[in-house]
Image (cartoon, rainbow, N blue to C red; front, side, top):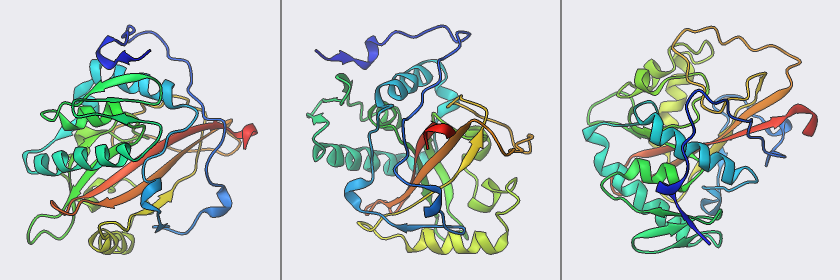
Length: 261
């Protein structure tokens, strides 16, 4: 029996959430590459569901309902790309056995029914998939791609409101390793992503913080120490939308116990 997303209970914000862990990662630390560290991705593996699906999706629903302004942003110039992204994801899910996609609603793998609201594409996407999805677009004559929209429920030490509308170098300004050389390589990569030929990479972030929703302001203390009990890892993907030309930066967030690796 399915449930509708609007009927999910919303807990008080002050209530502490239990940690949401995955039991494993789909890659290992040995697979890491030097920045930017990308590799080709099978288009059929763009969107994943893992053993934390139901719990992560329930948290996403809570965040969208209670803190929408913190987790969703869309500039006017990103509207068409957001609509194209929703149509693209729906087509992708229609080919996935775990979902049942109709004209007006989608039945998720956890038996929750999501109404397709094309007037609110990013919120609909936030209810459909585990991935956070960011729209990167390069205006005519601009030197870099800008962040024009995002559904970002699980930020890892950054705040959407400080990044929306910013170019890539400015977005990464607080990151010490993201220098001008890396910035040029990343821009060439974004320019070169082809429709139907996505890319992927991952990061590896030991932590003692189990919060998935972890926004932090720029230049906050983000020092990471060795010997921490958990690992937060983002499987990041780059997908070109053919009509708008926007690049979709997807983030599938994993949180595992170091002892389980």
